[in-house]
Image (cartoon, rainbow, N blue to C red; front, side):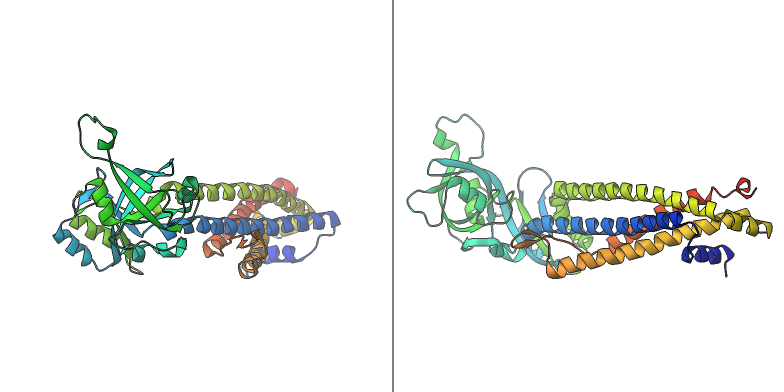
Length: 399
């Protein structure tokens, strides 16, 4: 058996004759357990909040979105459309048109995106599950589905025939406009559904039929703003991207869900890193105290160390005793803290004891990645603290 490891194990199990040292060691060990437990719980909570925040965009955004590399629209030829259907990794694809326009109802105005979609759109984005009032629009009609935010700002309900719901779209072209009506294409729409997802998205889009959007914007029949794609399960995204690049060479850019919500992902990741660093700082402070407790054990075992040194033990082996002892305490404390943290997270997942609102439980996610991050943090910082304390073992101490 390794000599330093054997002695470190004995010191770990035995108590000191000095009761104050025993109390300090217990407090340091409890600090490690509580620190690792708290770090794991907090990371699990922020993982839950991250997934909860992204769930809104996940319900709204496609797996991949194809858009023009320059300008607001691009043309899709019949040959390109046929090649799109031949890509093996694509489950469904839908053509869209997006343009920022002006909506008017009963003297109130609201600027939002008019989003023209075809009949396949509901298969790519399960929009129907977020419609809380009315129905999804029918093809080849003037029906629209609006967001809850737009509905509230315009005081607009469904099937309101007393006041027209109008859209004004700037006409393309150049030259002097002599009359205001020559500047816009105007059309009366029929709201048949209201969707509700999040405060940011509820007033962003008004959905209409694709051909209606093309007519309002004076687009050609094969002119669109983008293509939204739903991938088959397990498909390599890069393979599909490469196939799309061959069909539309130097014409398009492709974004996945993370790239479509780049600012949101960056904000959530920054928050996660910031919380990790804050709690790691707390653990560092705990381990400073732990390092001091190891040094007190060294002082307490000074006579034993002199005996071992006189019997021929190397100074490096004596230092390794306390390095291993401190590391073992951190490993055991970290595992016990992770066990307690796992129980808390799993109980919250199963029984939803802590609620944000009466109907919404505080979201938590049990992740093995968080387990590894916490364990690696505790062990690595504990090793450093133990190394600092064990370095105090010197020949001067043996005198």
